[in-house]
Structure formats: C-alpha cells, structure tokens
Length: 544
Image 1 (cartoon, rainbow, N blue to C red):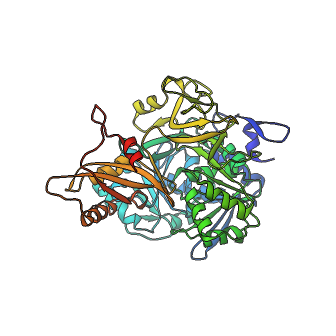
Image 2: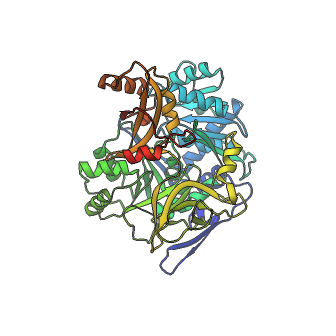
Image 3: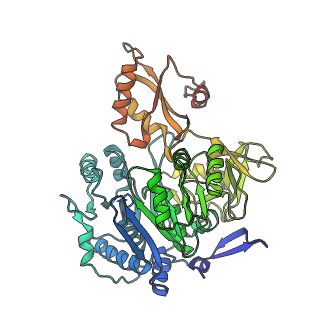
C-alpha cells in the first residue's frame, strides 16, 4: 500500500477510473515527518531521488538518505536561528540539495520561497523586500551569489546566506556545515494550516504576486501524480522543470513520493533533446512531463525509441495538434495535457483511462468541483465560453488552493469573489464533457512554459529615453507557443529604424531574465484604447 492511501479516499468506476477523491489528514500533517520520514522508517532502502548532471556525476538517494540529510540541514538552519514561520529563499536550480532543503524547512515549519536562478538583480531586490526573507540558500553557479549580494545591498536588507558545494565569499558553505550537524531531529510542532511555501507568480498590472500555500498542499498533488502523470509505485518519474517554478512542486517532489515513485532529476542548463532522451533510456524512466516547447523540439529533432516510458504528459501552454500526432505516431504514447495554476494544483486534465483529444484540457479533476461561469456569474451551456471557477469544499476554503496573496488581501478577496475561486482563464466544454482552453481573461503571456506579466517588461521598456508609451503582448510562436512582442510609441525626435529596434531590445533584454526577453518590436503612431484610456491589448493581439 502506498502512503498516499493513509490520507485520501478514492472512488473509482468498474474500470478503475477515478470518479472522486477526498482527503482525510490530521490537523498537524507535515510532509517531512508524515511522508518522507514515515517511508524512510518503513522502507529505508526505497529509492527516492535519482540525480545526474551534464558532467556525468550521479547520485541515487533513498528515503533513508533524504530523512538523514534533511534532518542535518534542518539542524544547520535551526542553529542559525531559522524557525517556525521564518521565510527562506531557495535558488538551487536542479541541485539535489533542493530536496534536502525543502523537506528540512517543512519540518521546521519555516516557509520556503523557491526562485529561479534566471532572476536579475532587480527581480531579486523585489522578492527579497516583499518576502522579508530571513535566509537564502543558493547555487554557486550563474553568478547567483554576486547577484544576491548586489540585491541585498540595493534593497538595504540583510539575510543569512548559504551556498551549496562551494566556498563563496559572503556565504557559508552549507554542504560543509551539514557534515557536522546532527542526523536526529525531534518533531517540531506544526499545523496543516500553517504557511509552508511562497511562490512569486506573474501579475498583469503590477509586480509578481506572492502566492502562499499551507502544509496540506502536497496532498492535493496525489491526483496530479497518480491520475494525470501516472507516476507509479517503484517507478521513476521525470518532470524537467527547474526547482524555482511551481511545476517542480507538481512533478518533482510531493505527489510522486506520496504514490511511491522515485523522482528523476537531470541537472542541466541548456536543453538538448538527444541528451534528454538518453537520460530517459539510461535510467529507465517510466513517466515523463514537460511543457509543449520540449515536445516540439523532440518532434523536430527526431524521437528515438524509449522502451521504458509508459506515459507522457504536458502543461503550461497550448499544444499543437501536429506535435501531438507526431509524438504519438513515433512513441505509441498519447500526450496527456493538464491545466492548473501556481495558485492551485491540477484542475483539469486528460486523466488515466481517458482517450486524450489533441488540444483539450481534459475534464475536471475529481478532487475539485469546477464549473464554467459567464460574466453574470451563472453556469454557461455546452460550447459556450465561460471562466474556469472552483466551487470550494468550505466557504472560501479549498485544500490545494492557495490561502493568501502576500500582503495583498484585496487581490485575494477579488479572486475569491462571490464565494468561488476565479482562475481568470476562459474555456468551453464540448458535448463529450471535454474542456477546451480559449484564453486568459487577463494579459498573462505564456512563453516556452513560463508565465510572464506584461508589466514586468513594460516597466523596463519605459526606462528607455525613446519610449513614450508601450504595450507588451504575447503573439503566436511555433517554438515557444507565444513570443513576447512590444508595441512602442516613440517620443518626439525619434524615428522607427532597425537600429533603434535593436538598441531597445538590447537595452531591455540586458535587464530582463532570459525567459522575459522581447523577441518582436512594432512601432506604432498610437495605441488602441478604451474610452477610459486603457490600452486594448486584445485588439493588439488580434492585429498580431
């Protein structure tokens, strides 16, 4: 019996397809003690993490290892004054220390803040100031330590700094510190309703919003792992996401370990399709999840045989039917799309037992009560476009859905208006009950599997002396799903030239994380606007 069965009740039909899933967990549920340590105590040699990198290093960690190393890291944290409710930022790429740190922080009741190494100094300044992070654990690579020191200087903040596997000036080597730390850790009292994690997610009209999840959040990923990704007991699941993104929580830790699957981690910087499929075959990966961008590259470069792979899933952006068809033709596997948000777990998907339809979001997760509602707040009919909303299990409370926006109660109340959670995403349902994505009700750009808020890019654009007004939108792109396009009105004395276009791109892209880079610039005489003066991005998107 997998450990997840201790915490949920599944109702299936005669074919074993899930119809309903409900959770039952104690008030003090803690993933670190009740899942990781319990598996370690019962089956210490059970495989938890298979890790390798581009240099050819390899480590295979059992649950006993994860328990030991997370206890040691927790003791390092505690000796430095990190405790219940303290916020700790993790910028660890795909380094295996991320798993030790995450579990350690959960055990202490501290709040972890995963962040990508691609963030710029200004990105880090905002996150450090907003979160009031007490400590940061980071990679020594990609100039992250330098950027952090500069960000702390600019923000006027202080934080305890650790680096993994390296001695870096201004940082303590946590790898060394762990070696002398105790392997024992007495259980720290925590509650399932305590804050556990803080993700920053892109906003449409301002800086990224801080999304807070509580300790019950991992349990909501049981459906994600078992019924969508089809991770299996004693299998090996491979989600390629970097640990700074919410997709890592979806596919690299919680649901997979709950259902008894080990997690495959390939620590790389530059995506190379052949190397990725080599890893799948070398380590006998059984289930795989990646954004459509990855599948597009795989199809374009040619897909080799992957005999151990039993299931493939995708999420993050629209999947082209042609990619779906070619992948299935070559592998015999149906690509199963799924949908959710940083604020939630998996909401809709092509679940186990279904025949996936190319381009469909699938059907609502049996874990959630989901409807499509019109602007009048009433359910819409078949083939009518409505917003995806969650009707909660309790008033304004649903396990798996975030519990607060950091220091932004008005925004939280807005998305929970009328007693339901509003995703801001539009879809329609066909005659077979399948949902089809229609677009964002807001202006979030999904590019290469990343979410980008236009404000973040527009804010940098407006610093260029030639730019009087600008609007950033996403436009269709064959490789990325969407490319970031800037529509710019120039100031007096400036003329639209190729040289100016390149200058503006270089000016902005030097200050933006790579996934936010402007790919296209269009100069315009004026912007389409509403009567109240707001730029009509929907009109610009239609114009391409």
